[in-house]
Every structure is written in C-alpha cells, then in structure tokens.
Length: 235
Image 1: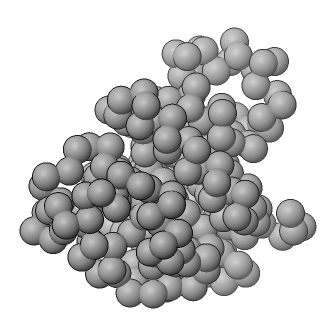
Image 2 (image 1 turned 135 degrees about the vertical axis):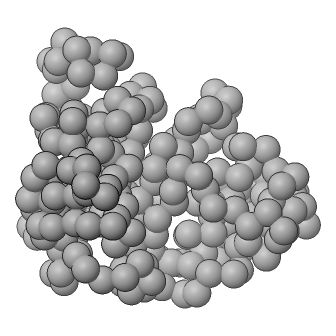
C-alpha cells in the first residue's frame, strides 16, 4: 500500500435541497484496500458515494482522487478519471441484452477486464449473454452492473449495497468476486448493511450515523468492537 491514499475525503458536507445530510465526512481509501462504509438506512452512506461521483445536488468539502480534486466535476469526468460506480439500483438498460449492456459504456482509466476475463468471473452472464436486462434475475442484474463497470475500466470501484435482497448463494458469489478483484489490485469502497458480508471481504471499516463518521477500525479490531457495532448497526 502507498503512503498517500488513493481516495481522500475531507470535511464532506452534502445537501438534498434544503436538507443538510452529510456533516463533515472524512474517509481515506488506500491503493489495493477494500474498505466498507457501514450504517443503517438513512445514515448517509449512499449520499457519500453520490457526492464523490459528483451527482449530489450540493456538496462542499474536499474529495481528492490520485492527488486530483474532484469535487465540482461532472459525473462523466469523475468516471473518466477511473472511479467506477455501481449504484444500488444497478442501472441496467432493460431494452439491451447482456452483451450490449457490457459494451455500451466508454473506456475509462484503470484496470479493465476483457470479455474473456468477465466470462470467467461471471459464468452466469455468459450463459445469458443474449438475454435482455428485463429477463435477468436480481442477482444476475447485480453481476451485470459490476461486470459492465469492470469492462469500462476503474482504478477505484464504488459498490452501493451489492448484496441487498439477494439469495445467499449470490451473496457468496459476489464476495468471491470482490476478493478476486482485490487480489488483482483493485481498490474498493463498499457500502453495506450486511455486516457479515462486509466482515468477510474488507480490510477496514467506517461506521456512519446521521451523516457523520462515528467509528473507524481495522478488520482485526472487529471482535473487540462488537458491542459498539451491535448498538449502531443492530448486528
């Protein structure tokens, strides 16, 4: 890991209209790390990702990626720098088949997986390559959303609730994918409510509550912090 974080968020403030929802968020993610952002619904996790990507209506503070200031840049310029965003709603184009969804986005900086590599990583998608987005299960749509981002290229992958509502076998598969990507050098910031999943894949954890970071600890500290986590997350 390098001394300088790949992503450094400092004093991030965010608003939805007149509602002030982020209150001085500080996060660091170093090259090659998998870091989770934990918290209950409404804690501000997704809003933080949206602010990083430049799709929150109003944000203040500082977002630095690979030494460059991103705050205020439009979404397409943030993506081109090499930040791949997989939103909770997945954003699958229903009228396009799997292959068309995969090959539609433009090429960005960072690690880019070829179609052959994606077939190995997501064999289910290869079997459904001519199926339209509307014909895919929730788990298949999640895999497609991740695969599409990886084919476009990314230095940092932002995953928003990738396991929500999915069957345990699919959750296990996504965990395997995250570990495989980490082994290849991908840097990942993962928003999760499923702490059991997050615990298996992450190097470090941040805990959010009411738009603030209220805890930060390494994977090795989890057992000692379980009482605190139970109180905040209900795990």
